[in-house]
Image 1 (cartoon, helix red, strand yellow):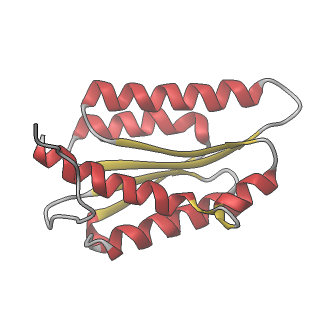
Image 2 (image 1 turned 180 degrees about the vertical axis):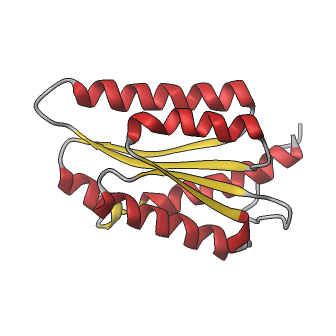
Length: 154
């Protein structure tokens, strides 16, 4: 039985969208920069990478759904950050965002990569936005490139 997997290369006709929240810019901006850098390193041109900004994580799924419904993207990378606070707001936003993004991926058949950090403390987010745990924007971009190539083979 053959094994089918995606390669880490971007075909010339593939477009990507990065949808990112403006909330927590000290975290999200490095995630966006890391994702853009990796997409370019793997063959995407600047013109093939659209960046869409929304106010916060709660608004991410609806913006992603709008882009997915228009079509034309080989992958949609979603970046944001939700930090636990003293209320249940964290759970509502983080869980609702993740569920909404999965729904968009399943409803529209497009790879939607969830790079929304849901962390206990701001320091945890800093560690994942270019700190001790790397840059999760870069990781999401690698997954997007692989999934886009896999989609072309399936």
